[in-house]
Every structure is written in structure tokens, then in C-alpha cells.
Length: 440
Image (tube, rainbow, N blue to C red):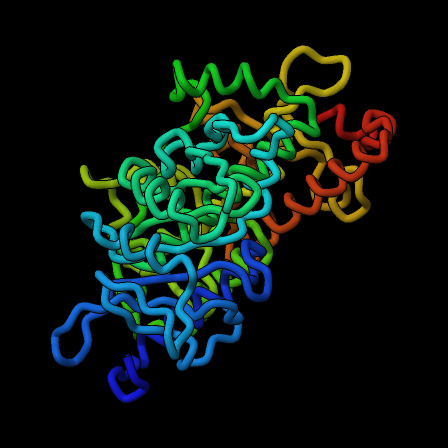
């Protein structure tokens, strides 16, 4: 293939660049690691595989570093396509697999390391959080390869794994995913790495992971509030309220802050603003500035088609005067909500701030079980403006703007990080908690 035989589509280039930058922002790549591939139809109607060049900087991709190959032939010529091109080609030959991605998902890798004699067959990774359990179909296969990069064994095994599972992991190397779009492939890797991070935190907190995983296998509904919405490939160009320019900017700015501040994995969580008869709604709240999600205007009244996520927003508005609602999946809050404090026998019903600002803003952060009473949930939102649902994320409410309500999940993450840091130092949290927290 010569340089004159292809012409890069500008939209495709921008997508590769945006996903590359986002993958660095959420730290699932190093400067040169991983690769991305999509099915691409050129101006002559020929189907090609577009894939990143080997060793290219995913955060600073140049158009010349996106290679266009025949999906049935390997070409490592002028463009130096990834050495894993054969793997991606086989993945993309599967039904509904229009994109694939490989990332160095550090937290997931660390969560699945072992010191067993090699060769070996590692145990699959079992998520213990709702996003991981539902979006990853309950598990991520893990394989060890003697040559863990582009080997014939990988070319055979990885596509086979992805025919049955959305994500698979090469032990000590990284994860591969398949998606209907590149955004979905990226989403799945973010979810998988987030699940690995939660497992790592849970181990540090002394959570009985084996007991949780047995429960996940036998009765997942008892551990999680409700299944998150299925990933939608609805175009990010969907904007139902273009005339509301200031509000649109607020949604985009808030979504970007959620993603950049690690308050929720890519395209998870939700945002809303109450209107007179409708609700302005972002169903994929964690949005990098370059990869937005759809912004919808939907009826404020209940509808049969409402997902549990939408229904929760609408129920909050119908029973209160709140004007804004935000829902995030903060991994640190999920891990802490599962931990049992020293001297106790059950997880706590509160997260108590030990830092100065957290203590000033909140007496405590209430924690409710997965099967929660909505009236109690609403009362706690009135009293504290933010509530953690064990297995259901962090919900916050505001009386005015999205900026106002964003402060709550942002503060919750900091409060959790300080508690986790104190535990790492071996400090006695009970001695550090304000006495007023006992009176909540």
C-alpha cells in the first residue's frame, strides 16, 4: 500500500485522537502503549481496517499514524501498523464488532497478578461493582502467554475470548475489548479498569472478596441497587435543546469535570435539570470535552420506557423542590461503603469526613443498602444533599445549578481519599472523626 492509496477521513482522525487523549487522561495507557482499530469504508466503498501505528503516541496522534489495511491481509509496510493487527482483524470479523481496542489497564492488571509457576491458566476476574458486573457480563477472562505481544497464541485466543465476552485480559500486559463503536470499546476498558481499582481498594480495606464474589454469582440483585443502563451508541451529536446555549455549556463543562476528576468512568452516571414539564438529561454524564454524550429533553412525568436511572431522577423531582440531580459511580465511595469498620460486624451506614473542609461541609455522608427505602433516601437527600448507595453510586441534588450539585460528588471523593490515606498510615479513624458525627 502506498501513501497515495488512502485518504484519511477527518472525522475518523478526530475520533482516534480524542479517544487517544481520553485514554491518557484516565490513565489506562502510557505515552506509547496500546492500539485502536475500526472497520472503515473508504470513498470507493471498500472496507478497510483503520488501526494506529506501532509505537504511536495515542495522546498526540498524527494522521499519518493511522494505518488503513485490508481486513483480510496483514500489512506491516510503510505505515508500520501495530504488530497486533492480526488480532484486531480477527476481532473485527465478528458480528457487531466494528471497533476494538487494547489498553494497559493498570488497575485491572495489578488486580489479576499472581506468582504461580508458568505456564498456567489464571483465574478469571470477577467484578464486585455494578458497572463491572453488568457491563462485563459478570467476568473478564484472563490468559497467560509466553510471548504476550502479537504471538500466534494470542491471535487465536483473544478473538475467541471476545466472541463470548466484551473484554479479555492478557496477564501482566493489558486488556482487549470489542465494541459497536470505538467509544463503546473504550467505555468497556474504562469499566474493566475501574472494577480492578475497586477490587484493589476492597483488598486494602479488608473486604471479604471471596464472600462477595460468591454472592455476586448466586444473588447479584442483593448486592446492587439496580442494573445500570445498557451502553447506548446514540450519537453524541444528539442535542434536544440547542436554543439553550448556556445550559448546554453547563452540561458539557460539568460532564468534562466528572470525567477529568475521576468521579465516574467514561460515559457513566447521569445529570439532569428540572424544567416545567420536561427534564434536560445527560444519560452518559462522564463526558470528555471531545467525546460528548447525547443531551436529551424528556417528559418529567413517568413513562413505561423509563430506565431505573431515569426513573430515579423523575421520582426525586416529583417528591421535592430540587432543581438539579447528579449521579456518579465514585470507586472510592463504593469500596468504602463495602468495608466494615474496626470493631464492627457490618459495613457502616455513614462515611465520616476526617478532613477540615469535608467536616465543615458535611456532618456525615449517609450510606444506604442496595435495597433502599425511597422515602428515607429522599429525606437524607434533603438533610445532607448527597447519599451513597452501596452498589448504586453517589447521588447528589441541588437547588440551582449543575455547578452547585457537582460540588457534592467531588467532595465525597476527596473525603474518601483522606479516609483511605489515613488507613494506609495505620491511623485510628475513630479518634479522627469529629464528635458531632455521632449525633447525625
